[in-house]
Each structure stands twice: as structure tokens, then as C-alpha cells.
Image (cartoon, rainbow, N blue to C red):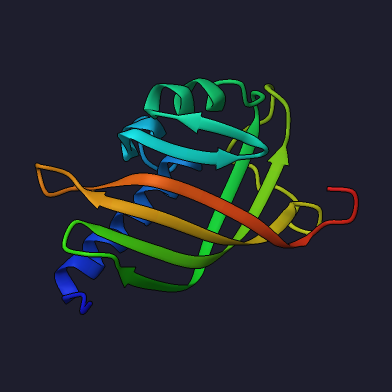
Length: 146
């Protein structure tokens, strides 16, 4: 199925917004990016629905800084209402502790956690927004011992 440029850009923005919220660059709950029956396969757990996503993310330690860099993004339209996105994701994480100044740069050498192959399934909601139905990743590269 052919994807028009408007749909491609809307889905690309949904992916970028997800990671902007996850990394604290944009205000708003990450769980709001999921459809009511959306599922995130995250760190060995299956999170069902936005409330479960937000509850799991609330457990992250204070002072955690993350950055998710997207590359090799491509889409495969399932039909007019669903699109599958596949991409590589570089994941950086640094746990500085609750007293750390978030304006200070984190050390990059020890912060690269993994490079993953990530697949998202998006569904167009009644309001036209693209919502996550399924999100899962598998590591391609990890730090030894990570």
C-alpha cells in the first residue's frame, strides 16, 4: 500500500513525540501516545494501556537522563488505519542521582546502552491522530554486561 507524504510525516512525528516525552524534552505523559488497548513490550514486561506505561515509567530513578536517536526509519502500511514502523534506535542512559544538575552534560562513553531494532504498530484514531497499538524492540548491540 502506498503511503502519502502527509501520513508518513504524521507517523514520523508520533515516533519523535514518543521519544521526546520519554527523554523529558516534551511535556506530557508517554502513556497518552498509546491506544486504549496498546501494548509495549518493555524490558521483559508487557505493559497494557497508557496507565500501565506511565506507572512503569514512574519507577525510573530520580536523576536518570536518556536520549533515543532514531535512524533507518521506514513504514509499511497495513491498510488505511494501520501502519507498521521499523527503525534502528540508539539508546543512551545515564543515572546521575537525584542531586545532579540536569544542565550538566553526561559522559557519553559510558552512556551508550544499546542499539535496537524497533517495530511499532500505529493505528489512526477517530480524531486522526496515530496511536501506538504495539511497540517492541530487540537488541542488536549492547554494552558488555548490560
